[in-house]
Image (tube, rainbow, N blue to C red; front, side, top):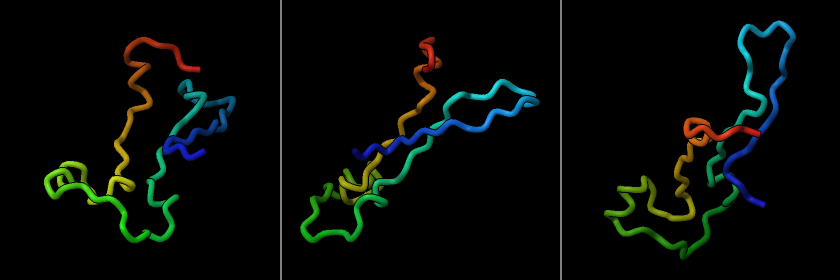
Length: 77
């Protein structure tokens, strides 16, 4: 299944000076999964395209902060 947020577990050395994050995340852009752009792809209106930064809704990917839940006091798995 397509998910824009990927996770990985980094190497944790025995002599790391700071406590590392157990799981790190990164986002992949949607154009990686689109391939060739098909004809007749839906488009935003010009004013919405300026707000979203792209003309095509299929290429719009808002950034979601993975650490937002940590700031609210929730525990990380």
